[in-house]
Image (cartoon, rainbow, N blue to C red; front, side, top):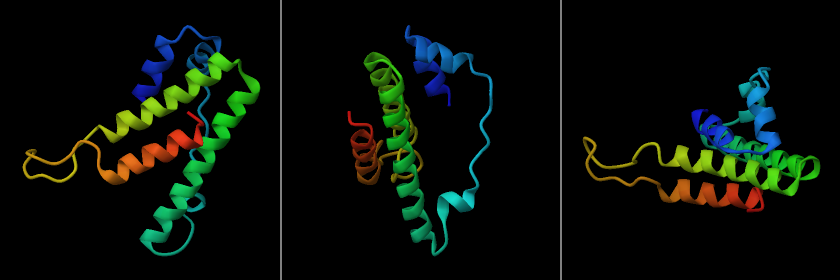
Length: 119
């Protein structure tokens, strides 16, 4: 969340200022609607499809409603948040030694996010 706020504060674009100024709190989606039914693996696959759909829809909406500069900044902000999240912790290793900052699965996910945002 702080990554989004930091990105919006550093922007001089009207859209980002409006997003910062908006104090409304959207309701959290129902977890069942995000995960669906089935095994843990099926639920994670459902979640990924739902997430990619929402990312794509958000990018498309901003592209239609905002200036090209604002749309690009918004998409780059979403991508920066995804990258910052992927870099938040190492995977693997032992007692904080070794491991990798971004796993192959996380890198594949970042590539999908980039594609969904048309970056």
